[in-house]
Amino acid sequence: MLHKLFNIYKWVKKDAFKPTYKAFNSINTLPFYNYQQVIETGKLTYLLKDIDYDTPPKANLQQLSQIWEQINNQIIDKFGIPERYRMTLMAEAEIIKLRLRAAVTDDRSLLTIANVKERQLKESLENQHSADLYELKVLIETNFKMQIDIHKMTVRDFYTYLQLIERAQK
Image (cartoon, rainbow, N blue to C red; front, side, top):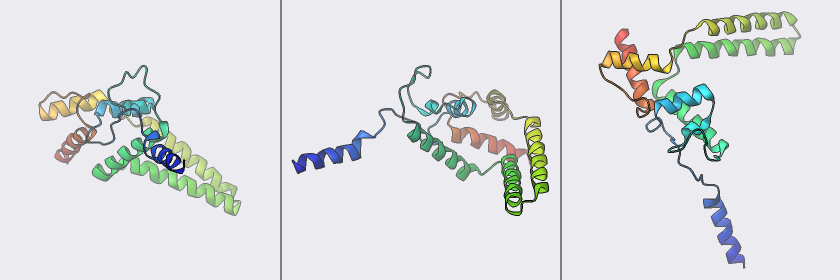
């Protein structure tokens, strides 16, 4: 009896929580189109392989969230943080520090400054133009004089091409 329980425990621990789907789990395999779709729609099901995206299977969102975080960490490790994003993070950190200082010191003027900075950040983000997927695709095709299929080109390849274009423009 104890032996049977142990075998059930091993099965549950090992196999029961494995996903029943296959997912892209690396920037080396994830097509850029799927990556962009996750960003635009917020649907992590675009990380899944060989599915109908209109009726995706029931996927473990926690596992897909971990895969998504892993992919973003790979991008940061390989390509770094874009300057615009780094500046946004620094501005957000400054706003948080002001709010914390206001809470600790009970200085309401710091809240006013934080609100002004937050409004300025929001306005600057609204005024920034970010190229859409097809503009970036055309940029790569024009610079490298080749056709690319964003449904097959991986995230790593796509960002590598963009990085090469950026270096050539400096």
